Structure formats: C-alpha cells, structure tokens
Image (tube, helix red, strand yellow):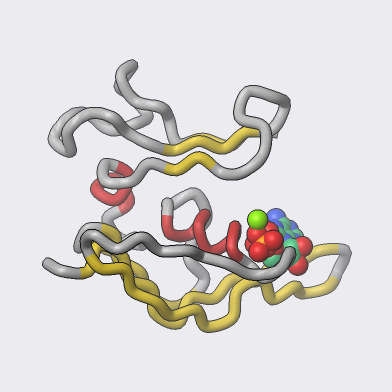
Amino acid sequence: MDEVLTAQGLTKSFMAKGKRVEAVRGVDFAIRSGEIFGFLGPNGAGKTTTQRMLTTLLPIESGTATVAGYDVAHQPRQVRQHVGYVRAGPIFGTKSEVCGSRGPPSSSPPTTSTKRTPCATAS
Ligand SMILES: Nc1ncnc2c1ncn2[C@@H]1O[C@H](COP(=O)(O)OP(=O)(O)O)[C@@H](O)[C@H]1O
Ligand SMILES: [Mg+2]
C-alpha cells in the first residue's frame, strides 16, 4: 500500500445560529508513504474540521477517507490505532483534543488502554 491517507469528496456542514455553515466542501487529497504533507489554508478554511473527520473525532458527512488502508467511517477503531493527533491550541488547558497511540497496532483500543492517549474532546 503506497497511500497512507486518502480523502475523496469530503464534506461537512454545521448548523450555527439557525444557519448552515459549509465547513468542508469536497476535499480530495492523498498522502503517500514517506511524504511530508503540509495542510495549509486561511482561518476558517476547514482544516481542523477535515482533520477531525480523518481522525474519527467527527462523523464524515459525505465522501470517503482511508487511513493506513482502513475506511475512516467504517473502521474507526483500526484508524485510531494508526494515527497520532494533537490539535493546535492548549492541550492541558480547559479545551483539549488529543487522539493517538504509542503502542503497536495490535494492542487494545485507545479508550481502554492506560498506555494510550484516549481520543477525546473536552471543553
Ligand atoms: N462545531 C462547529 N459548529 C459550527 N461551525 C463550525 C464548527 N466547527 C467549525 N465551524 C465552522 O466551520 C468553518 C471551518 O472551520 P475550521 O475547520 O475550524 O477551519 P480552520 O481550521 O481551517 O481554521 C468555519 O467557518 C467555522 O466557524
Ligand atoms: Mg483550525
């Protein structure tokens, strides 16, 4: 497998104050093994929302994505075993979102192992 991450037609909308906000509109990309990939864009472009979908922290509205060959929507447990994610902003403050693993893929899922950082959001 050469592509470690793929996204095809990813979309996500939110309802905010009675209005629909189109946060991500048809994002496509692929990252191959060994690549260093910069995911850039202005504030509000949808970078964080895309990353939250790719790390299983937010349900994908439409489109497809794979991580390490696993389908993000249908194989979230396997995906979590292959990603480490620390979002920008305070990690140990009042708002944090951390998802990751340091153990081998075969060990227990992030939510149950003391050796893993749980995939979680807190406000
Ligand atoms: N939970 C949410 N509820 C409502 N709107 C949101 C939410 N998360 C993000 N948005 C909106 O979606 C758009 C993309 O946000 P975001 O993914 O955080 O962009 P970026 O990380 O590129 O700055 C923005 O307009 C933002 O206000
Ligand atoms: Mg962001």
